Image (cartoon, rainbow, N blue to C red; front, side):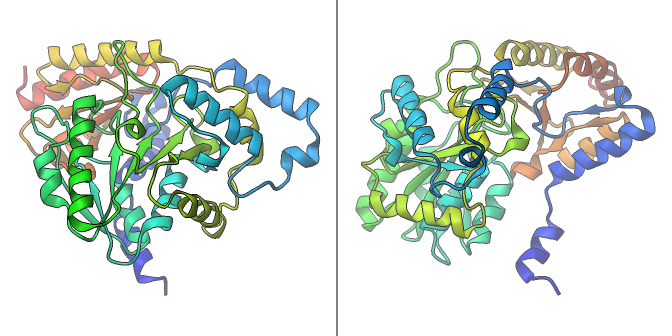
Length: 396
C-alpha cells in the first residue's frame, strides 16, 4: 500500500504532464507535424552556444575529481559568489555567496524553502491563476494552501483580497512573475502594495511572513518591461530562480535560492536551507551544471523568437474571434474559453489535435493556457485548426 499522501498525488496528477504524454501518443498516430501540442513549457529553442562551450572547457581543463565530486551542500563557493555578484550588478543588491544556495531548479528551491519554514498546519497563500504544483509542494510538508485570487481585470494581485487571506498561521506567499499561466508581470505598484499588506500583518500578528518568489521566467520580458526585484521592497523574500526557461535547460535542473541578509532569522534560515537540500535527497545541485552556468551568467534568452511567436499567435487568435490576454513575459498565452467551460473547450480542441491546458488546472476556470515556446511553424500550422474550431463554436 502506498502512502495516503501519494494516493492523493497520483489521483490528482498534473493535467499538464498528462496532456504532454497524450501529445506524444497523438504524434505517433497522426504524425508530429499534424499535432499542435501547446501543453507544456518545454523550450523548443536550443541553449546558447556558450553552454556547449562551457561544458567542453570544463571537461577539457578542470580536474575531473573536482568537476564530478561533492562540494558544500549549498554549492561551490566560487559559483555562489559569481551568482551573487551577477545579481548585484543587475539589481543593485548586496549579496555574497552567503546569500546563495544552488538548487535543483526553481522547483527544488521552492521545496527547500517550504521545508525550511513550514510546520504542520502552517498556511501558504497563492494567487490564482497559479502553477498547480505549488499546492502539491505545500501539502508535501503538511502545509495548507490558501487562495487570494488576482484581479479579473488585469490579473494583478489584489491587496484587499490578500489582506483577507492572511491569518496568524500564514507563513508564506508564493509570487510568480512573469506569471505562469497569464504571462502578466506584476508591477512595482503591485509589489509595493503586497509588501505593505505583509508588513502590516507581520506587525499585527508578531510573525514572520515570507514571500517565495518563483522566478524561472524573470529573463523573459517583452516590450522593454522590467520585472521588479522583490527583495528591494520586502526583505523577507526567498528568491527561487532557474535557468530552465531562460537558457533552454529544463532537463538539467539547475537554479539557485537567494535571500537578503536583512531577512528575519537569516543565518538560521540559510543554514537550514543547506541542510534541507541534503535531507530532501538532492544532496547538492548537479556539480557540472553549477560550473557551466557560472560561465554563462551574462547569456540571454531567445527573446526575439518568443516575441515573434507571441505576436503571431495573439494576432491569429484575435482574428478568429478568441479573446487572448497579451503576455508581458514568460511564454504562455491566457485565453478566455469560448462558452466559459474550459474543460469542455480543451476536450473539443483535442478533436482538432490542439492540446491546451484548462484554466481549472491553475485554480482559475473559464480560461485556457497555450505554451507558445514551440517552433514558429507549429503555430502557423495550428491556425487553420484553431479556425476550424472557431467555426464549429460559432466564433466566426
